[in-house]
Length: 264
Image (cartoon, one colour):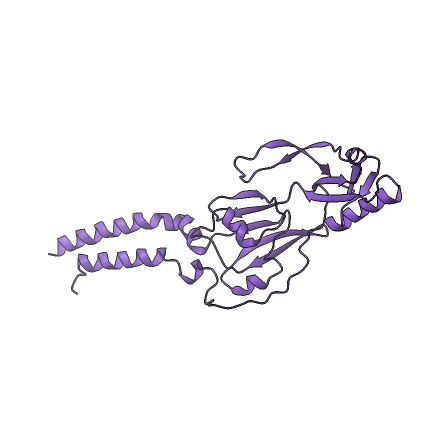
C-alpha cells in the first residue's frame, strides 16, 4: 500500500481543524431573511406595575408652593445606581421605598398602598387623598422610578445592571448597552426572566427571527433579567477533549512525518 504523503496529511488536519472551529453564519446573524418590510405589532400598555422594594420619587405641587413643600420631604434610602456591574457602588438616593406590604409612608397622608398600581393610578390615589382631606387645592402629583433597571448576563461584551432613566427600553437596546452579543452567543435561545404576580416567568427568545418585533417581551420591564447562553462552539471549545485536540494533532503530525521518513 502506498503511504500517505505528508502534504495530504497536513491538508486533512487543517480541514478538520477549520471544520471543528466553524460557526454557522446563520447562527451568528440577527433577523435572518428580513428585507424591507413593515411589521405590525400589537402594542400593549407598557406602563410597569409598582412592586415591593421599588424606590419612587414622589413630587407634589400646587398653587400654594409653601403648602406643597410640606409634602415633598422624603426619607433617604440607599440604592445601587450604576450602569456597570463591576463598578456599582452604594449611593444615597432620596426617595420612597415601597415596603414588603406594598405601602409607602407619606407626610400627613401616612401609609398609602402603592404596589399593584401603575404610576398613573398611584398618582390619582395620592391626588384624591389630598383633595378629600382638603390638604391641597388642585394638587399636581408626579411619580417616577429611581431604580428602574434591567440585568444583562452571559455571552455579552459587558455584563451589566443597567439603570434606565426614561423607564422604557427594548431588548435590543439593552443588549446594545451591554456591548452586544459575542460571537459565541446563542442568538436563537436568549432567556428572559421576569417576575409577575410574585412568580418568576422564564421565556426563550429567538433573535434570528423577526417574531421578536411582535413579541410582548420586545419592551423590557423593571427588574427583567436577560441571560445569553453560550453556543455549542463555545461549549465544545471549553471541553477537555477539545482542548487536547491541538496536542493530538501535533502528535499525529510528528508520527506521520516519522513514518514517511522511514518508508522512503
